[in-house]
Image (cartoon, rainbow, N blue to C red):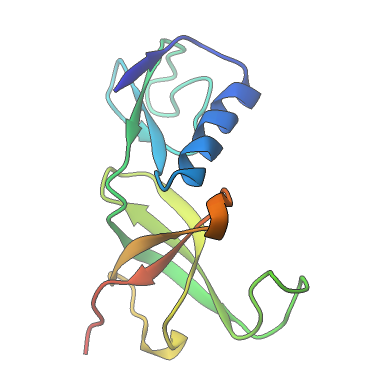
Length: 136
């Protein structure tokens, strides 16, 4: 864990993106109420303090909190092409994040399924998730 003094948003986002490049999901934790946060913020949404935050490496374990399947392409490749799954996953540490679920038939997914991170190729600062096990 690393304690960080209040810093510009660009520095917080840069540290988070650097983590993705090396295969880590980095989150911040409030030094007052201990709430985990993603994305990193300048004040805690729970207790509203502006005190220093602690950076942590998230475990990467997550569950599907919500999802939908898109059947229209909004961006050209390498962006996901239809059908693709956009989901909100809840990290084991608490924060939720919007992502894609990959390497699975979207019709087999269920809310509450366990997922694990898949980081971008060649150090690209991105993370998607794939199912760990599917419910039958």
